[in-house]
Length: 287
Image (cartoon, rainbow, N blue to C red):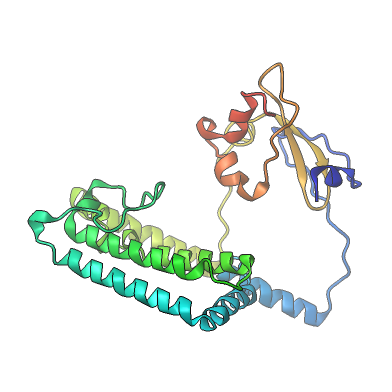
């Protein structure tokens, strides 16, 4: 649906100032009351969403079934992946057996640009560098296994690739204290204080998760700490609110930038004014 099509739909009038004291009331769509069985399904789905982060287990299962069935029907691709794994294992064995005097960090594989997990200088130490390269090799192999498989829909391939990358990120050496040289160096510098504070944070997170405790009101002032970019709501329906930010220049470009809320909280509207995209665009006549 185009932006013009969305704007042509009937909507409630809205001219709320974004930096005002309160948020505009949302429009609640009319819906029929749920039956007992529908309410039970809704409770089960809500409980599942809480433990899966909002992901649908059924969608994941269908995506992985699509990938696995097509991989099972592609013996040539499986042979290629097996030979690739053997070649990587042989290269890794030669790297590990290299004499210490001839050791070179990132001999087999280097982190991708923007991957800061192994950016610290301590990761060039031989023991930790071997673990990092082994992980990156496994990551590359899984990426090749989940991409370019004939017959798998692009949507399912993207789901499988994303899910496996998330699982691999969990077991990255940088996520474990005794395989992360930066954590070990901080432990030596603080006398183990980082482990104590991390343990307390973990206990608090577990308590909040088990008790379903909601975070308390943050000490932020609207217009000062949050929502500091001036603007107003120019359109609202039961699905969206369209905010038009005020330009910071006398002249503006004829085509504004449309910001999608899926990424607005992380990259577009951080609390700091130093790295806010809306502020950047407003100063360059794009709002």
